[in-house]
Structures are given as structure tokens and as C-alpha cells.
Image (cartoon, rainbow, N blue to C red; front, side, top):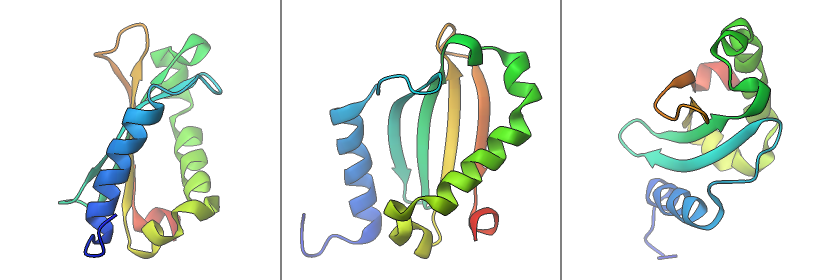
Length: 117
């Protein structure tokens, strides 16, 4: 890490490194993380995931979208490892695709500062 690396540049680098090292992740709770990026222009961490098994169903996702939104907000609020990101007022976007049909987006949501503070 450079002494002159700002938080945004660090986020870009760390998202790339995470993706290269860990993605795709093992499936946990019918969800797999495929990649992570950081958009400096919008200050948004973007998580590209896939639903598998029973969650890979547009109707189930649609019926549970509000619950999913609430769970994501709770996860961000409770996650102490991203404290610096929250203090910097970053956003967190989740783009979730079908594992059976990777071009199909099942769920897309951006959690903004007003949602988690």
C-alpha cells in the first residue's frame, strides 16, 4: 500500500484483490459472491452475486424483496469491518443474478447513507 493511497484508491484496489483471491465464493445461504468493485464516481461498493438453489427463483425474490432489503441494511449497520467506509458515507450496491441464467438480474438495490445511519 502506498503512503499516498487515499481511501477511494484503496477501495478500488481491495475490491479487485478480493475478487481475484476469493471469487466466486463458496455458496452460503443460497448466495455466491461473483465479484466486488468500487465505483469512485459514486462512492459505491458493488457486490455482484448469484442466487442458487431455491433462491434462484424470480417469484421468491420478488415476494421477499423488502425482507432482503431490510436484511442488507442490518448487515451493513452491524458490520464493524466497514466502519471507515460508513464514516466516509459510501454506498453499497447489490446486483444479484440467477445462477441458472446469469444474464437475468433477480435483485438490484443500492443501500445509501440515509438507509444505514
